[in-house]
Image (tube, rainbow, N blue to C red; front, top):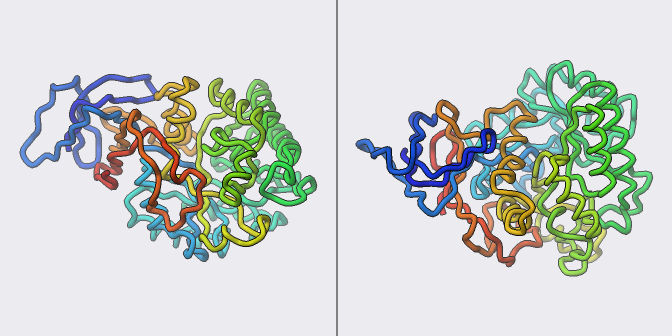
Length: 413
C-alpha cells in the first residue's frame, strides 16, 4: 500500500510533514517527501492530500461486554466501533460476566479477539470476582496474556489489599488502573449532586501516595474532579509513577447536560462543574493528564430509557466520537495542537502498556488513522450495538476516512 501526499504526524518525534508512506507486509517501510514515491505494480494507492496520517489511536479503557453481556456489545461489534473511530488498539476492562479473574477467561477472550480487525488486549481483575476481598493470581493472569489489572467499575476500598496489588503488579512490570469512587460518600451514582467529588478525591489521594510508596505504575481512570487533577499533579512532582486519563465527555460536558440528555448523561464518575471541566483541560495542557480514554460503556436502549433516572445504568459509548470530540473541544479552541492530541490518544496510552503504537517511523507496524480535522460530520448511526450517547446529532469536526491496522484497511468512509 502507498499513501500519497498526507500530512504525516508522529507525536514521539514531533514529525509533521507532508509526505508519502509505503507499507509492505504490515510494516511501514518507506517515508519520503510528498511526491517522491511512485506506485509499484499491484500496489493500492490512497490519495491523502486532504488528510492527516497519524498513528492508530489506542484506547486504554473500553467495555466490550464479552463474555456474558453481549446483548449490549460483543468483541466483534466493539472492534468495528473501534475501527470506525480510528482506533487500532483497545484494552478491555475485566468486569465481564463472569469476571475476567482467571486464566481461562483471559485466554478465551484473547483467542477470539485474534480474528478481529483491530488489536484487542484484555486486563485481568485485581480481586477475585471483583469483590475486593482477595487478590487474583496476578502471575497466572499475566501468563495467560493479561496486559494489566483493574476492578474498573468497583473501587478497591481495602488499603492493604491495594498496596499488595501494587507490589505484585510492579513485580510483573504491569500497570494497575483504578476506579476512584469511595462508596462512603455516594448517595446514588451518576450525578454530581448524589456522587460528589470528595468520593473521587479521597481515593485519588490514597492511591497516588501508595504509588509513590510502592513504586507501582498506576492509572487514575476517567478523572473528573479539579482536586483530583491537582492531586495527580502533586504526586507526579513528588516522583510517583502515576498516569491519569480523561474522557471526552468529561472535557466536553458539565453536570448541566443531565437536564438536556437525561440518562444519556448519567455516568460514573459523574459530569461535574464547569470549573472541574476547565481543570481537566488544564491538566491535559500541562501533561498532568497523560491519556484520553473513552470508557466506552454500551447499554441497551431499553436499559437507558427506564422510567426512573437512577434505575438506568451509567455510562455512554465513545469510540466513534472520541477523536472528533478531541478536535472539536480541544484542538479547534486552541487548547492542544493536533500533535499533542495524538500524544494523548496514541503515544502515551501505548507507553503505559508497553506497546509499539503511537509513532510513525520506518520499521514499525502500520497501524494508522487517516482523517480530515476540518471536515464536519454529524454522528447518527454507529457500528456499536448501542447508541447511548449525548453526542448524536452534534456537529463535530474530524471525520475518520481510513483506519489501517497491521497494514490492512479495516475501516473506510
